[in-house]
Image (cartoon, rainbow over all chains, first blue to last red; front, side, top):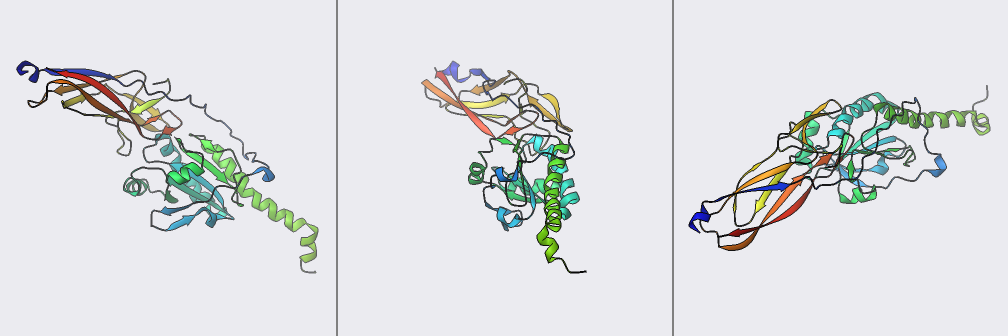
Length: 201
Length: 103
């Protein structure tokens, strides 16, 4: 016992046993306008109520009529950090045209981790704190970033983006969805009913 | 780890990233954990220090004076947060059980 008490143990631990699934390849759509799903086939985005960094309750339903870029992210997620400057730019460039960027943080440490991050990185769009319930509603969110593009009717207009994609792909999808409003407005103006309702000249 | 994947090193550059951390509980005292030399990679414009492939962590234990003789086990918990160049997975941990014999 006397000898053993002074003995040092040097024990290796192999840690290469963590095995993950195969990764997807980068997507490379650079089109000016992305092809959205047909409107009739779009599924409604699951509703949620979460809290923002000011403590306000935010419902997804509040954004009906807006195009929503719904980004699930975390402060510890490197690829998410690549996207955040793009989203800040989108917030500035497209907000007046009807885009809302919503970032839902999945940080386990909550606002204690998230608030310093959004302050340091000057995040200019609304950040909400996610939870397991919203994660399940949106497919589990096992990997981040995961981003959903939601049309003005609150429906998924594109396949969700799991992982980092190109900035131009977001731009093309945003423009496609923002244009849908304009197309609808134009179509309404050109319809016979609109003609009948227009003031007589 | 599979090709293309990494975990953050024990000392990531960015304070918001989650470091690899091995901790032990049991009858022996954890003197220190030695991590391998990390690699530096770029994800977008972000520089990261990470571990990839197969790597080893070494733990140095000391037997405390009052440790009971006989068979026992140390329980290790490895906390990690893994990513590839496109996505990250939620922080997780694996546990290892290390039988020891104290004479």
